[in-house]
Amino acid sequence: QSALTQPASVSGSPGQSITISCTGTSSDIGSYNYVTWYQQHPGKAPKVMICDVSNRPSGVSDRFSGSKSGNTASLTISGLQAEDEADYYCSSYTTSSTWVFGGGTKLTVL
Amino acid sequence: QVQLVESGGGVVQPGRSLRLSCAASGFTFSSNGMHWVRQAPGKGLEWVSIVWYDGSKEYYAESVKGRFTISRDNSKNTVSLQMDSLRAEDTAVYYCVRDVGWNLAYWGQGTLVSVSS
Image (cartoon, rainbow over all chains, first blue to last red; front, side, top):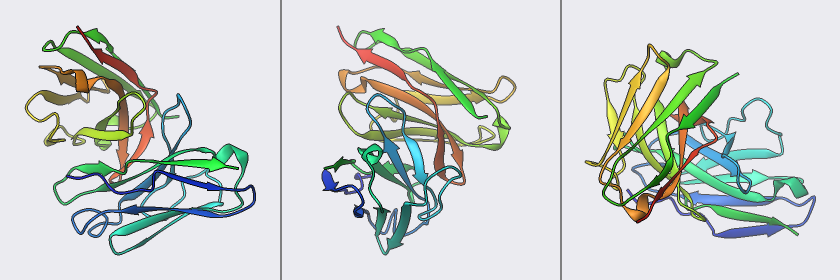
């Protein structure tokens, strides 16, 4: 199972919006709505920001939103803040009953 | 609140074995699948394995299949990962993760495994 494809890095200024893409195949993202997005700060465990493609867990800011089209999922962060600077990962359930992660995207807030 | 506490990490020589454990609390442990996910130093996340809520099924990443074995004890609220024939490339922080509806929803703080001679 190959990793999902994410851009290595994205950047934006405070207050702006950015979108991180996560491209898979018909064997993962294209087959299920079990796409999860994680935020990870250095030295910390990942934190779930979006589950089931577009659902925000309790306590996650509504500045974070998720969507999916075909084999590609996306995470959008609006109103960028300094504390959003982190690594972001996507994951998906697959038709092999396994899970696969994206390679990660480093978000820099300029 | 949900708590997942990993233990058992450490330094081990290539070819040797190590057993990780994860103690869960704050939820009905026997109702959820449990995963192990790892992260090599400076690298991304890699899914390792899942055991179903009742222990009836297990699935593994190709990179660990045949070397790692996941198990759970619902009477003790624990999940374990037996790692045999360890390689340098198994060096990573290993996270215990609770599955909720096929999402890796709750994460422990991780335990570091270092495979080195």
